[in-house]
Image (cartoon, rainbow, N blue to C red; front, side):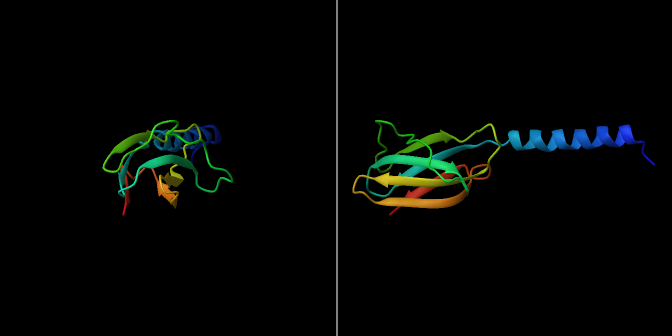
Length: 110
């Protein structure tokens, strides 16, 4: 039988290990625009949030056939994000629950 201090130490170690593994994920995603339209705005937020984050495009655009690499690393260890893309003709495409810890490439297609 383990003594109480040893049990607490093991529990603390397991908790720290699981927190470190969440931080170890590569949250970089290559966003590909294959729509035939220019991508003007791109927003993301962790899934379940009530507001969209800032437009990461700023004054830039993403032409059809081009891609951009985004970093979704965050202090809270989120893996699930919602994406919102706005194209030159006003088309808005939204996708919920994109797992950026498992997805290296995300494609917008025609």
